[in-house]
Amino acid sequence: MISEAEIKINEIKDFFMSLQDKLCLELAKVDGEKTFKEEQWVREDGGGGRSRVIQDGRIFEQGGVNFSHVFGESMPASATAHRPELMGRSFHALGVSIVMHPKNPYLPTSHANVRFFLAQKPGAEPVWWFGGGFDLTPYYPFKEDVIHWHNQAKSICLPFGSEVYPKYKKWCDEYFYLKHRQEARGVGGLFFDDLNTPNFAQSFAFTKAVGEGYLDAYLPILERRKNLSYGERERDFQLYRRGRYVEFNLVWDRGTLFGLQTGGRTESILMSMPPLVKWSYGYEVEANSKEAELLTDYLPPKEWATL
Image 1 (cartoon, one colour):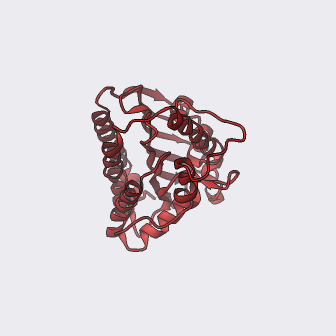
Image 2 (spheres, helix red, strand yellow; image 1 turned 90 degrees about the vertical axis):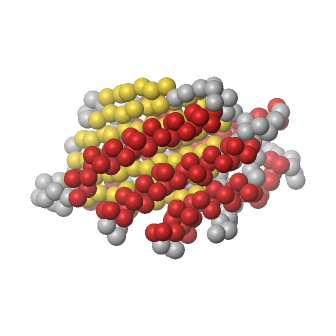
Image 3 (cartoon, helix red, strand yellow; image 1 turned 180 degrees about the horizontal axis):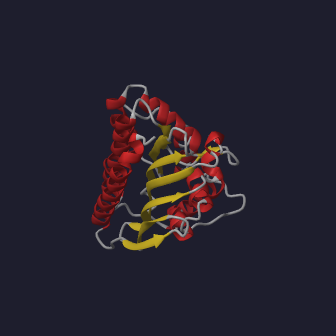
C-alpha cells in the first residue's frame, strides 16, 4: 500500500530545500558581510545533504542552515525509543535545521527545525509524521523581544486551532530543559513531534508555516539589537551560558542522537555548537545584576504571548 506521504515525499523535499535557500539568503543579508559556504555530502547507507555555514561575520560568529535526506533499512534507536513498534522498518528522514550564534551578547542564539519521517514495512501501513519548532536562547534578554518571539509563534499556530500554541509552547518548555541543571535552555517557543493529524495536508501546512515563520520571529530582534555595544563582562557571561547550549545538545537532544546513530555527517550534525564557549567551575552571578535577571525573570517558563 502506498501512502499519501510516499507520493508527496518529493514535494516535501523540494519545500525543505527551497526553505534552506530562503533562510540562507535572508540571514546573510542581515549579516551584510559574510555568506553561507556550502558542502554537499553523501551518506554511505543512503541519502545525503547540503550543509551551509556562515562564520566570522559582522553579526554571526557562526551559524548553520542544514538540509538532509537520509534513508535506510532500519530506523535508529533514537527514533524508536518512544515508538518501539517501528523497530525494523525502513525509513526516510528529511529535515532542515537552523542554529545561529551571533557574536554580540545582546543578540540571542536561535534554533529552528522542520522535519519529516516515513517508516515502512512490507504488508504494513506506512507510518509518517512531521516535527519541528523554534526556540530562543538569549543571554541579555529584552522583554519586548521575548514577547515578539512568542507572539509570532502564537500567530503561526492560531489558524490551526486555539489549542495548538499552548500545547506546543508547553512541549517546548519541557523539551529544552536541562534536567541535570534544573533550568531551561532559553525562553522557549514551539516544539512539536509525531504530527500526522488531522491529515497529511494539514500537518504539512503547519510544518511549512513554522519553517517560514522563523525569520519573522528572529530578524526583527536582530535589527533592534545589532548595534548595541558590549564589553568583556557581557562576552564572558555569553560564553559561560553557551556552555548550557552545548550540554543540552550533547546530553538531551534527540536530533543530535538521531543524526549520529544514522551515520550522518558528524561535522554537519555538530554545527549547532557555538564556536567559542567556556565552563567556569562554581560560577555565580551577582545578585540583582543583569546576569541574574536572565536566571530569575526569563528562564523559568511563563506566558509571554500577548495576542
